[in-house]
Each structure stands twice: as structure tokens, then as C-alpha cells.
Image 1 (cartoon, rainbow, N blue to C red):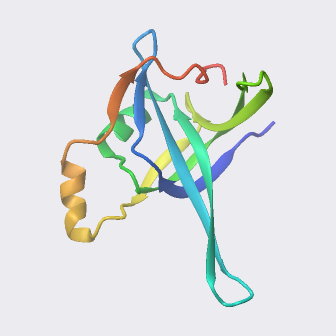
Image 2: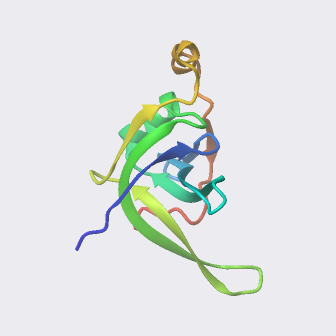
Length: 143
């Protein structure tokens, strides 16, 4: 069976790095994909979908920490997975995630939203990614 998602989009807020209880780092971020069109009145309209992404592969997490920032455009290949949870009214809900782990999936940098002269400074400066303890309970290696 095949379970593969391919997206090109922009990083939302800066990626977060989480430490698992066994001290492994995982990364999470939101990816925006947009579609633009002219409506019947000739005005441009845009619709944006937001995708939740979780990265378990160590080499990609290290690269995210060094290189990715809010607004960067990336190419992503991953696996679609779902997490079930109960809301405040005890109703079962599901959240979709794109997951990159093991040898599955990839993440490639395409471009920065910054002007060319600022891009060099951004890539050599410290990353805006912060490392946090205790990943969200919805993240699972068994996804």
C-alpha cells in the first residue's frame, strides 16, 4: 500500500524542537499551501490550507534547527497519519499530520521570503528555533 503526501508550501510560525522522554529531538511546524484565482468580479482571491508536520528523522531535525525559519518555502514528502483525541465535550476528534521518520520522506529548502541581500545574513545567524521539553502527547513514533 502507498501512503505518500507531497507538498510545496511556506513554513508558518518558526518550527519547534521537542525533546522526547528518551532525549531524542523531534520537530513540528505548520506548512501553508495556497491557491489563488480571479473571482467573477475579476478580483484576486486566495485560499490557504494549513498542514501539521512532525519530523522524527534525526538528520532532518538537525537541519531544521540550523536552517528553517518562518516564511521559508519548502518541498515536503511524508506519510499522512491521524491522531484521535477527545475535546472538552468528550467528543472524539481527529487531527491529520504529515510525518517524516526513518528513511521515509524528505524535506528540501526552496527559498526564503527575504530579499536576496538579507538571505545570507539569515542563513548564517542563529536559528529562531527553540528546543522544548515534553513533546505534545499527540506525537507518536508508531504513526
